[in-house]
Amino acid sequence: EVQLLESGGDLVQPGGSLRLSCAASGFTFSTYAMTWVRQAPGKGLEWVSSIDASGGYTYYADSVKGRFTISRDNSRNTLYLQMNSLRAEDTALYYCARLHSGSSDSWGLGTLVAVSS
Amino acid sequence: QPVVIQSSSASASLGSSVKLTCTLNSGHSSYIIAWHQQQPGKAPRYLMKVEGSGSYNKGSGVPDRFSGSSSGADRYLTISNLQSEDEADYYCETWDTNTRVFGGGTKVTVL
Image (cartoon, rainbow over all chains, first blue to last red):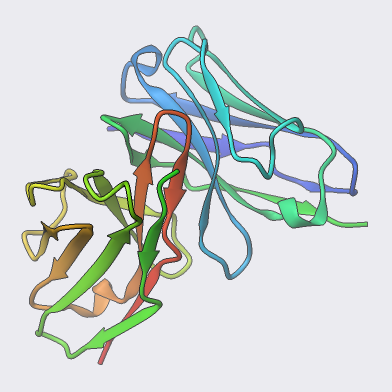
């Protein structure tokens, strides 16, 4: 069974940094692209970033480009999202998802990031 | 880049059917989309992928009541024999080489 477990969410001040992790199990992590998607309180889903299976190609939404960095450690079956220069509008529940033939086909339960002074 | 548009809400009676629409923007009418369900307070769940040909591929454990179809730039999700647990937000998703987008979501109410 595919399992994705996010962690690392916290309350952080504007301008601060945070690193999210997503521990994967139940599938061969190193053969799948992965993605981060966020959901602000009461709002819809917003794509944040994606990474290919090897980690060699990364993609970002314009809203986070230059501030967030996606990475992965295939030896640890873990996906990461380093978030710097955080803003109030980054407040959201952050989900990691597996990409299969293009679509997000398995989702984690999410981790909450709150940016506030 | 691709854009997908969804109506904000839909409602139908218990046991009836509802058909949700996801419309692709000009120049992207052939794109594949995915449908996701998000029940209140829960994480999204992948339902299926729908191609421009109308063929669809459901995720593991998705009930037979859920089906997909397509017409031009429109991709559909039909829920038959609507159940109370189908009351949820439904999002469509599409993607390109270096980006992916979600529709604004359709809130389905079971009357």
